[in-house]
Length: 130
Image 1 (cartoon, rainbow, N blue to C red):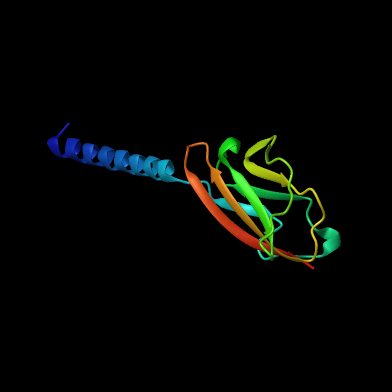
Image 2: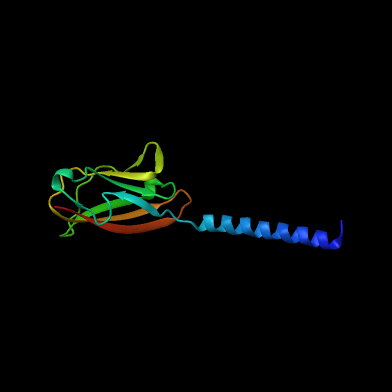
């Protein structure tokens, strides 16, 4: 094997190694991002169709013990909720049952989660009941 062939092979191998390390580093820095929610952000829901459960679906698994969801109305009053839980078949999905029907108005959903890799993420979104 010539010296040039050896240098080229090592160069290609080094480039591949750097690529894989870079991808691993990006995954290590990833946080749980909110992928979808029910009700949807900005949704205007008929009162007869108001949700009984707030559902948040994240990009990675969630640690239930270190996560919280709070729902408040326009006046800032916290809505009475049941126990937060993980979907039994999908640890990326949080479920928060609402203990009473939602009245007409605007609602704010604030969430704080810790993903299975230990990273904290928080956010909020609004929806309305008409």
